[in-house]
Length: 145
Image (cartoon, rainbow, N blue to C red; front, side, top):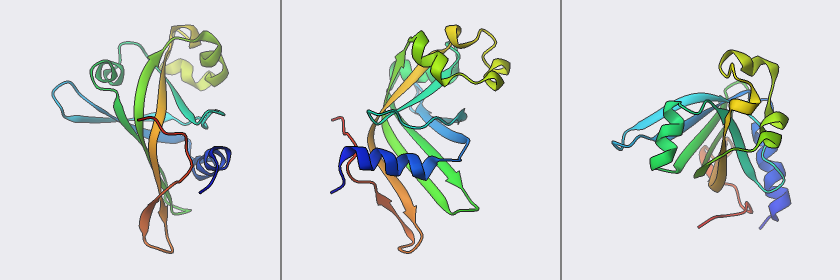
């Protein structure tokens, strides 16, 4: 079984170069909602971070149901990754500034200081193994129960 550092590096390699992820949340009525998000690599603790506007539908959904899924797809390279976990809403100016890119200004006009962070602690991750023609679990990530 790979160690945590190796698993984090492997997942970062799998999502590297995929600029957009699709975040799926559960609305209060139980229906699913998906939206595109700018991709950031996992941090050293194996956490995914995303920036959002505080009054977005995804943030409202996370306030009532923290279980989320993040999907990545690179058709040309046949890289497909699915990550599920629990999302926490965080306000941390230093992390927001680190993740900020000037292109975000169009959908977050208040800048990094007005953004809410979506911190996703990974429960499980799977990736497409073309040789096996199926999704396989990524072993060794830090798990929350």
